Amino acid sequence: MVSSFKDKVVLITGPAGNLGSAVVKRFTAEGSSLVLLDHHEDRLNNLYTQLENSPDHLLISSIDLTDALKVSSAVSKAVDHFGRIDILVHTAGGFRMGEKVHKTTDKTWDVMMDLNVRTFLNISKAVVPYMLEKKSGKIISIGARNALSGKARMGSYSASKSAVLRLTESMAAELKSQGINVNCVLPGTIDTPENRKAMPDADTSKWVSPDSLAGIILFLTSDDARDINGAAIPVYGA
Image (cartoon, rainbow, N blue to C red; front, side, top):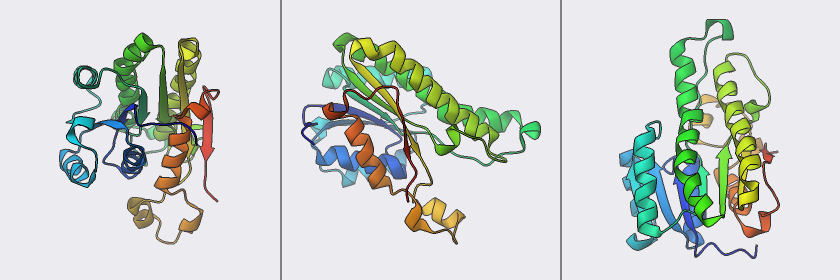
């Protein structure tokens, strides 16, 4: 890869999660300046102690990403500090098994839409105007294999991830003439401690490692991927 990330400001949501922390490590190794937004303050603090970046190149905020005003304020502070946002990687989100579709509760629906869709909308509304000023930027959203097809008791989750994908495609069409690339990654089962606990008999060798997924995200935010826009990249593992 010929691209350099040393002069890039990268905003990562959900950096304390399994995928988010892998993405953080990748960009840390590249020498990028990082803006990390997550609502898990304790896990953010633990992550901070593990990073090698100097404080001048790292900005951490513990916020509720479903709160549009707080997200806007955090992004504004980040731009005041670094001068711009070059890359947005939105790993924040969540998964819940739900009821059958005809028995779906408002709570199940709202939780999935808040965690997966509203957070993406909020961070996009806050970041994109600054990218438009620079006529440059890279945005990566995280969909899921289930964004393409529904499964039993996953109606709300599948619908929320499908919405993320459609929003990604729409933004790509809207922003491509402004030098901003927007793409979506569709992981299969990610190899996490939580998934191993939930599926103890599964063949984990066929799962996707967070580090592998982070590497694909790194490529999609590089100059080498400048001609990829509005794509849904399947990353299903073996």
